Length: 489
Image 1: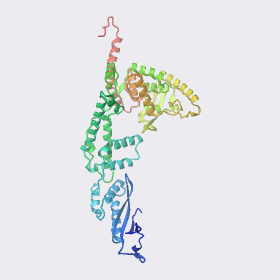
Image 2: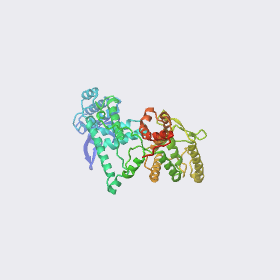
Image 3: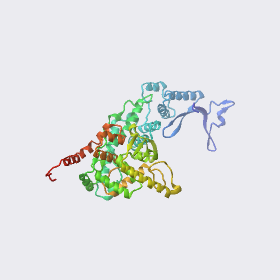
Image 4: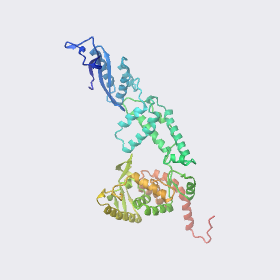
């Protein structure tokens, strides 16, 4: 069937049913009746990216030879693409677009266009169709990367520009998507600031699409179009319009301390000075005291996160053998992350992330108390308990924590504590701030947090250092004994 089939049919009917190739008039003796019926052929085409299997069916030929000649012509056009499945689909689109009675495209003309690295004449591959094929063929992507690409395609590119022909896509088309995103952001912010509770409630939990997220959305399209231009044997586009689109830098926001002034402003406006906020040592102590009482199940995990700064996935992926309390050290080699809420265990992000973290005596004591509680949980759970070898587990059944559940528990705990809010990931910044206050070097902080770059660590915490300068100045002044120290204004 892949080579195509040829048959003779007619339009005769019996009892309202078309006879097709079963009509007795089609035959004359041992051969075909040249005066009855028409010849047709059927050729299997490369499957469509969205609808699946498809066939080219053409009819109306007076002789079998004519049907065979056109079938072979269609096969020759498909063969021009070689093993390039994308191009074969484009030529198949072109064949299916030919109306009954219309001749198929000239082979030399299509071959000429291919040699010029153009798409086949008449092809109208849309951006949505191409992106569907592109993400399907990207089989070696990490699960999280695939999910990110897929989300960007389904949430932004296909709904807004899916019907635009690939070769007609312009930078203006792409820029219009980000204009729409910014307009939606403005609507969300206006609703959040509305005096009407119903309006505020309608966008509760709805996030704006920040500069960094917009950069990632654009990067997905830029990568897909670069592949269309460079990786296929016959280029689908001559240039990449995404490279001409300019957005805000999307640089990672610097951490800011929750100073008294910042807390006062937040209590009146509910606005954070920065998306990334860091508690002061006093606020850290207040949170840990609250967590120890209100959430003893996760208190040890939160304590380790705040003092040593492992990532959420690294904490959830710690095995018993990774925690050496005798040596007062934790080994970080793997992480449990979630992609679309599905938990995936994988190695740490980089070689720098594969590290050993030293623990203080207080943290060791907290982890020992946790192990004592965990042993009691196991006895209470009985047969419901699962031995997973994971260090931090749920009290009810010994199962590992889902990373999203840990973050949600943290958010609720912070909300109940009355403290100014930080994200779970911000506890890494809290850990860095505590190390800075204790006199640790940037290099030591880099190694502890598992950053791959010294420069990145230094850049991220420059703002925290600026906020801490006043505290340092106060401490330096008080070292010097004075007979009559000036009173504070």
